[in-house]
Length: 65
Length: 490
Image (tube, one colour):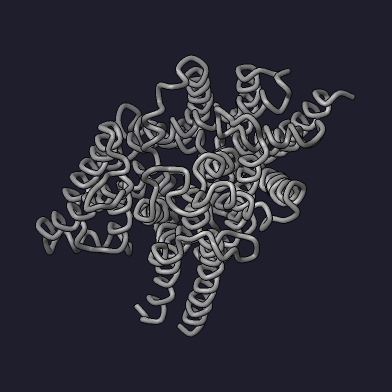
């Protein structure tokens, strides 16, 4: 498997699961949300962005072959 | 008109409207088993989106999300994390399953297991375990519906008649239209749900505290630490949330009904494309939590049943139409996922238990009729359990997510690893399920170990995975690898 794809697949897990010990706090509130909630909502966008890139790479590969 | 009449009217319109729409596909023609169970494998991006996304907004997301926020605080936020990760898993998993299903005519999760390991009995075992975890989940939707309609009709319709009426309607449209009926009613349900949760989730904090941030400031001032981990709990701490996120993100697509949903896709690209955008849909799960936190500050005296938080605060703040909207959306949030569960459980029973044992010689045409009868019988059983023995299945329910996640090594390694063997699959599944029952029943969920509080299902999954890998390495042979490669590729 392509190492870029592996990395893009792992980033959402590191962001959402691996970082929890470091983001378990209430303050500062970001966009009105407690910091932990903000971090997890941000993780949703991170997953979306990573998957978008993987999807682009996969579609391109299928067209080439 | 009185509040009761308006609320009831709105609930009726939603429930009847969705049922009628759900019946349409099945009234046009008589469906074959493949059309009924997996939508003729012809769902494009739109229907596939709603059938996959529709399973997110269940009774749990609606009542449980706000109830958890109200009672537990910070640990609730895990709900925001698992879905997006589950779709990352799904991005790779579903497109791998879907073409095998098309080539070999697979319609259920045990079909897939039977195919991957060339083992009829492993398929039957998978089906039995699946039914054992689907039934309580179905009962939860029924009980949730009873609670919602009773509260939102101001007690005019009590829970038993509410369950009887709503689930006769569910059985009717599943009977006629199968998966297509579930998919198109899910469209209606999701639109109504999103309007309801976003409206109330933003309106309530702004109405009482000026802004969402103002509401959280107030919660933090009144209860310092409640909004972080472990919040209002003793042991749902950082390690619990981390282990629970691993469990739920890997286990998400192990629910048996999701297999049918991926077999229904027109092609693998539909599944990949939707997996990219589905994480964004998870943001809506935030809004029920906002309602729960607001309720915590506003409702006096404290609620005995935290799951009522959403409905009680709406009832105290708004006139009847609002409670009708919540009731209608909530009723659909129970009915549509329940429809998918009924369909899936009936298929497991008909195809993988009946059709592989006493009914081996029956034709597909017979099974297509038989499965619809099972739908009716199953709905009746679930209703009887919900009315007469509401507590009987509670242990199964607590372990549901952990239970289905134990399929993960067997299915995922079975799809991607040619050394996986049947012996390993049997042993690992049995050991995983045994732990899933033993740990919670002996009061060890979460399991305190090495100074951590680990979700018992996660512990079971780790043991299960270790057993699976070890035994596969020990028992695989050149011949078994060749057969496995053929099962995956051919």
